[in-house]
Image (cartoon, rainbow, N blue to C red; front, side, top):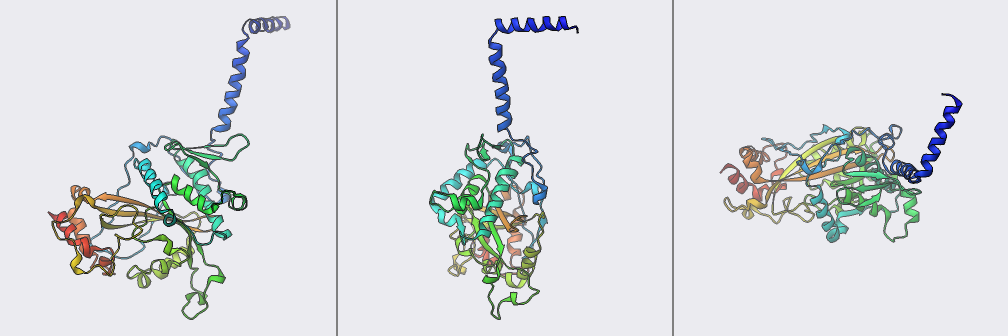
Length: 410
């Protein structure tokens, strides 16, 4: 193109713009909108897990629709009940399941928090920097990385100009900080509330999962008496429950477990000391960063809700042989198969262990309608025939067992 023709084109554009001044305004507005959108729209690669920090890659589910997704179904009962770890490998991307009950259960959690906050949230020592670091690491991984990466239609990450990253819950409309800086929040909080507790509260109001955070006991905590197995240099590290957020405890008050070792936490479980204690301690001590495992347990409950901190799941000395529900008198609508999907993994920076569980309840009527009534009835009897027969009493089968079996086989 010659210089003369180029000058003609430029002159034509000048005349066009002079006659249509709105074109300038539209152009400026378009540029501004483009910049605003890019600043507030999460970049998947930017928020992908950082391999140098030890987090695993998370596979996104860009088309996941929580409103049409059924809850996971577990039927883990077997003819004989053997007390074992029964662990299986878990894909890290499947750490937090979502389904169509999410919104309803989050509303239930909010109600429970108002009524039982001191039971639902707990920190053994709020001043402990190890505990703050572990809570910070779990919080930041889940809210800044896992949730917006795995479920982008449910959770949106954004960073306002000059601000810190925020996570928007597109289901509930709630917006929360995506990062919990343990050191900064511990020194700069002016709310009067304990920042670690606040972080646990936020976590439990965003994720429908319960979390127990365990750390190895420090030397100052180790007793030096003849009964302490840590005196043996070959004994594995012992893990202590240091913090938790637990909305759906299964028959125990989690507050009573704070600051206790695994063996002490499981003290009420028949056969734990003889059957599982050593292998559990070894496994917890040796679990590698990047390895995620899961297991599922089961029981039957009658008239007990998801929040069962004060009983209704495990047997007690007050329940004798004459207290059982009689066949034909079972409240079928209030009887459920209760399962916990339990997961365990190690945080890469703090090296804390995170024991998490998601509680599912299935109407006993549904189990029978699936044609599994006789299998479950056999499994109830099988509690007495496994390696720890006392499990039958521990799970209160002496109370509901005969009535439930009668219904399942009728």
